[in-house]
Length: 110
Image (cartoon, rainbow, N blue to C red; front, side):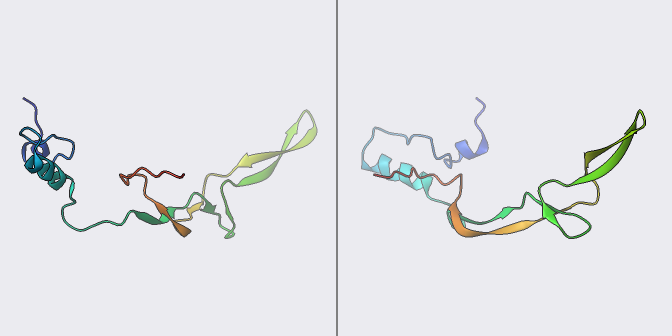
């Protein structure tokens, strides 16, 4: 009851193979883990940028503008965060490739 299509077809990688545990069962279980279709490399070469460009072309995480506030006859300068007219940085190329977070291998250093 309630099996999904991938489990019913035998593509679920965590399902145990039917049978006792002989060499055929081990080979069948290994066959379930093999990738289907094209092979994806485990490395990441780009990331989404976290900074923004303003209308002057400056690049930063946050932008502030100085505003003058008059309170009780005194002028004070306050910083106000700018949210408008900011353009996202876009895709950034990494200097060194990183291992993808979903890569199913445990890294161990001795």
